[in-house]
Amino acid sequence: MAVNSINSLTSLLNSETVKKGKDKSNISSSFDKILKESLQEVNDLQKDADKAMADIATGEVKDLHQAAIAIDKAEISMKMMLEIRNKALNAYKEILRTQI
Image (cartoon, one colour):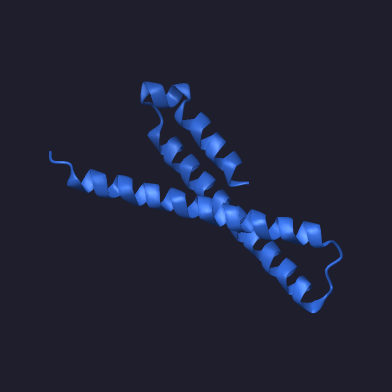
């Protein structure tokens, strides 16, 4: 889930190479990879939720509880991704406001 991606990003930022200021290109490519994986995971959860909703609507659902869980997972992951986006935009705006 996206939480795992956040944990891996945190460990990446806490690594010794970041603390020493070395290998910044590796950090940006790792961040890019983590971001793409997180977005793909959210997309997959959304697709699963859409399928679960379609199964509920057509009556083909075998386990209503699992379908509800899939829908909730998709909703929570989307909310978290939106909050991450909002925090990133706020940080960007704050950087633009800083005077040099």
